[in-house]
Length: 145
Image (cartoon, rainbow, N blue to C red):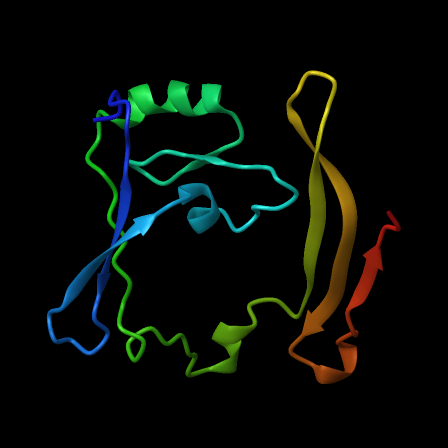
């Protein structure tokens, strides 16, 4: 399957109304569909069997030899009314008295070898607690480019 000269990627859509209607859509660029980090012209190489992302074509080719030994992946998501996470007791919601919530952002730059390198660009952090008086507002830092 992966040795063919022409590959066409199709996405099967099902009707949300449960009337058993299916429709195929041509995926022109699988990298843009799967990769949420598609920015600054950096494409990702996608394994069509497991949908794993790679930064180089060589890494994808190395992976495919092992991946094709397994059956293709199929994602099945629960219905929206059943996909609800809730707690009955507050002790299950906050397992720690204090904890930090943080997010770190970076961008990709090519280095001298042609590989992509992550360069930090900013972060956001804040303290959480079950006690409202100990919570802090988010602190954000963004590097000037």
